Length: 136
Image (cartoon, rainbow, N blue to C red):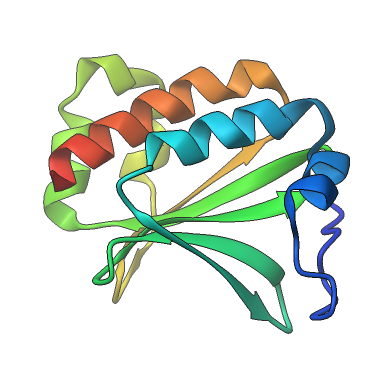
């Protein structure tokens, strides 16, 4: 799953190429994007990472979605107050270690989720719903 299929600037993802790259996780990708329907979406390109989808509210990115072959990676940063609220949430106990051990950067505490199977999605969806609610 680690291969990034969109490393060429001339190969910007579209729904057809995303479906081919993500395979069985294309529906999961669509569900995750639908969760953030009140946010703006923009494909951005960097030489080191290739194409990634930025989901943002003009001020701060909610998350970056990096398409991979057979899956995708979600990368985001949470603020200190969000981190504390998420660590107090008993429904997210399975993520508490990941959240508490996240490294602090200037934009917040960095988290990454690698989604390689549909079974990994429910916890990520719950996390994203909670984060969206906190950001209100």
